[in-house]
Length: 173
Length: 173
Image 1 (cartoon, one colour):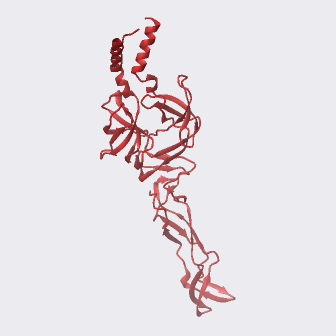
Image 2 (image 1 turned 135 degrees about the vertical axis):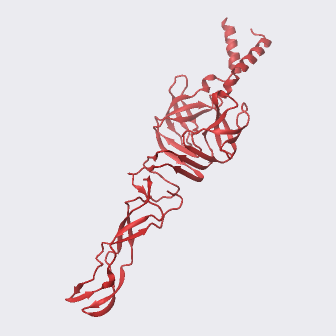
Image 3 (image 1 turned 60 degrees about the vertical axis):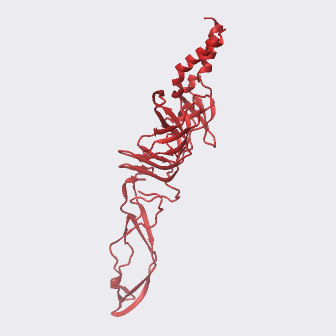
């Protein structure tokens, strides 16, 4: 086959198809993130150039993320169009901020839920509090200037038990 | 040189052969509505792809169910590049109404700061201290050297300090 025929066939094929290269997903490294949330990436393959202004598509609706340089992401091209790169699936490292915004409710159901911190259980509205009384209020028998004082009504119980009354209402546990 | 007839024939042949690759790509779509079973009615934003009905959702995280509003944007892919098997997978500007995460063992959020809702006050946990101020003036009555009296005691440090004793053991912070 001559080079001319080869070139003509190649042109035909390219005219009839989307670039197959851009149908795949490509591993890339985050170089930076702009204020609009889009990222600049450096693909691992030399077949793709560095790309900036790549919009993020996240695996959950209502989620916005901020990532660190060095985070790894899979790059895809919507409709196989090289002008429309999108950042899609992430390796686990590199998240700096995750924000979930829902209009109605976020519910987490699990036998155990840990929210940062050192692992102490969460208290809620109407949970109990224990107040041991250690004030010097028991004046059942004392003296003042040599005179005996008796105040039988001021003997407090050993401890008071109350409950939490003021909490914010939007978060329940 | 390839004649126009041969060219047209070749183009049709190639297009027929590679048409299935159209469905190997991801396409942007707009949510028209969410059905009761969670599937989506979608309007395609690409001329190559028609609107789609009852499209199931695949999430970037397992254990998740969502309710979303019309107007959000999502990427659509096709199982095995099969146009009859679309799925909605990655989200850009979807408005999330409700998110439920269900896990068999543990959900853990580890960050320097975890915010639940828009409250700006820290949550309380079992073992955290509570401090309850009370009136420093305590009416009292008794006897003074055998003679009855009434008066008011002034307590120098009128605070009770205790701790939270119960809460939600499966939610820790």
